[in-house]
Amino acid sequence: MDAGKKYLCLHILGFKKSGVSFADYRDYMVNVHAPLVRDLLVKYGIVDWTMTHADEKSPDMFDNIRDGLFSNFAPFDVCVTIVMPDIDAFLRFKTDPFFQGDIEPDHDKFADTRRSQMLLGWHTPLIKDGKVVVQPPVA
Image 1 (tube, one colour):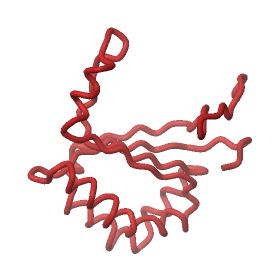
Image 2 (image 1 turned 180 degrees about the horizontal axis):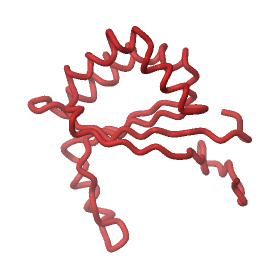
Image 3 (image 1 turned 30 degrees about the horizontal axis):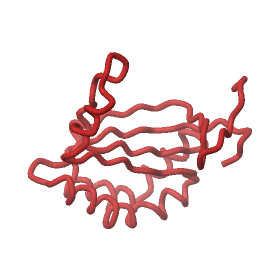
């Protein structure tokens, strides 16, 4: 990523399909869905793409940090993060025939997309690989 450029970030806060285990959900997303999607994301200029999966142990682990400041464990099963140069990159990705014919319908195999929520905003990396990458002031 160009350190002097502003990037847009989409967070997809998703849920697994009913009856799918946490392990099967993660396995499908990482080992089946991701290989289906990744080249098309790259084709349209996506610069970063990550997935964070919760599992059965996540709520109990969260209890270790729960306090007045960190008190509410989010109910989502996954947070997918897509960093892009602009909204047009994602719009082009979504209108590609391969997305519409193969990627979009694949979600029905593992995800409850009706419950998904999205957050779109500006991506500001502050620490990378244990090193501070941005010093204030940030534009």
